[in-house]
Image 1 (cartoon, one colour):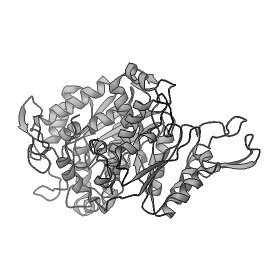
Image 2 (cartoon, one colour):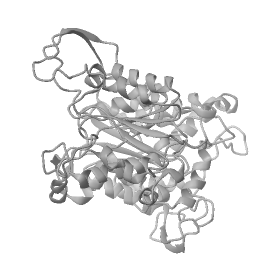
Image 3 (tube, helix red, strand yellow):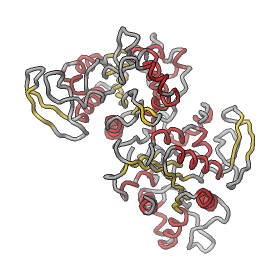
Image 4 (cartoon, helix red, strand yellow):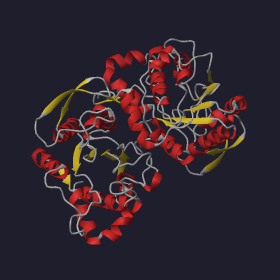
Length: 509
């Protein structure tokens, strides 16, 4: 099972977050430690600077101190074996934060006479014994996962909070887009965050989004030394991205710990969801975007509720594809676009990938109100309505449900990504006979079908296929497929939906 625009203003985001019931006490560390390599380390060189060197400028140094222990050239393995980690952990106190970011050097040679710094790839329990050519000592070398697990365990033993980060971005380009699929270390960090129940900050994709917007020529100015190491401005860009993500943790860093500069950084309020990242850079990816019926809450089955996207890899071959479920509960087709989530998901894709698009459940909400303002105009036509959004405080032109679907379809095709439209899964609402799921006559399933037909894109008629299956099973058996009154599925219900989606995808691939 896979586990893991116009920015929305705080008022809207805060109200949306309420649906996740994820608020907790604030984090108030005395010290924020950094463990990492040269991309985080501090230098006295404006043309070569790590992001950790500038992080303090975003925080009030009278309230929280950044202690940057990152050291150039180190891997997760050598950071431990050289005693750098032990020195750090001895100074950690209860309540502190420890940011952990490795990967650039872990792919190096396991044993040579130069650095001997590589770790075994993966998260398993493999190990190998060597006579280290650098130290002259016998050593047992473990996997990347082993070393990160040790660090996380040590931090938690101090009653402090570890935060795992994916790698910084290298200045390498392909087809006018910067590299963001460098090895599997970001995915391994993400998986470890789920396994160890620790926060995860995706540094790679948000930074790559910014670099793509700048373009290769301007980005080259940020990397004057080589393709890996950046200057002061590049360090600032990475640090700002990390600060934005820190604001999206739950519990989050207390707001008064930020400096004036830090308070100006726009928050990425969804860090706590630990949204999936790409597992295998070389494989074709199948992305999923949608609402809570695709990925519910944190994606962990809280309240017994699951989305079908969490089980898609049980029915399709993970040997051939990545499955990347970027759906977020509470969004309509409109707010998924205006909130920037569609752009973030599409930016992760590359030509040859696929994206399954399913919206509708939240599109029937009010167009403009003080709670969510997420509705779309009914239908598939060109109708539009200008509003002063009561949540964002900004003027906005709201379009039809079909318009937003067509936008996503067009955006996907423009990137060489194949869109697959899915009609929204049915609610558990029976017709007057009590024996069949009620089918609407002129609503989102019909409109999605119409958009698919007019756009010439593949369609998975999930609404009708699932409803037919419910009809066959009957109300008593279908009851077990839901974890609430009629909308959110249990694990069994999500798996049934996932199997139907997988069958549809198989017929398209």
